[in-house]
Length: 164
Image (cartoon, rainbow, N blue to C red; front, top):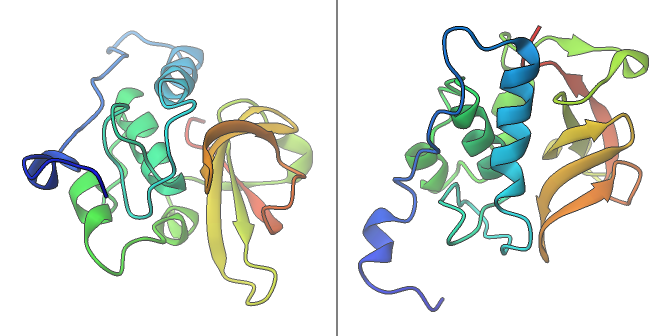
């Protein structure tokens, strides 16, 4: 895949640096999450990757790193765990995470997560971070990009709030 041998041992050990503190507001946490995700714009989509902005990520890898920067541990999802076979679809674990309440579509806002299902199976297969009610930052085959939530990513399963 074009990576050096050393990269194979460190590519998914990256944890985005914390960009918030004890006195940070909800808005500070949301902006930290989005700012971290924006560092990946134009980087490649790599299945099962939750690496540094130097390499690329898949959709749930992008969200994992954004959550780290905002001061949230996404466990049981982690950068290392995400790289293990069978964990490429960690968007499913994020959707099922009781710590992130599902919210009605009409109440979605910047910083919420949007989840999509595969149209043929109905199973969660994609996640993005809302920039506004209709736009998200996501990693999709082709790379990390800003895209409409209505742009052929599957069916919208719903929205989850990371920060209450």
